[in-house]
Length: 214
Image (cartoon, rainbow, N blue to C red; front, side):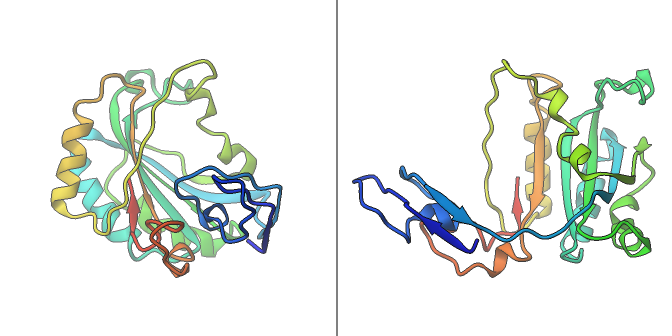
């Protein structure tokens, strides 16, 4: 973020330092303009995408934790406790089965360096499906849109945690076992990197020192 202008706080005061330009926080505000820097990426990006049997969920979560915390900043990993989509490209006998999905995208050219950087994300045990490869970035951004159609009612919330301990993993799996529908899911995302280098502020930059956001 380079600049923010015209931020109006709860009492109608223009406040350049209002929390919105630093990641939010509670309150109401209006940003009339802002300027930010973009980094070139794509049009093709390298991704790791593997589906693992749910019977190995705890082992996959532990292995993913160990690889995620040592991944280079060019790799953005995440893990999902979800169900296999009813996609024609996937064997029908796997559709809607509970699974662990490991995904990661490489923030650079989709070359041999990307393959090497993403390799640990693909080596967490024999997968049910491996859809890793090179895809258009815009396609990656909208890959799951069809699973969240307009008109449905969705509720989402998240937390910040410093460590993905064995106890935390068991807690995630315990709550995941109570999913009311195959469409319900738990996503574990990593933070760190540039996020962790933001000067922490208890109001406007909450969670920047956390490592995971499930």
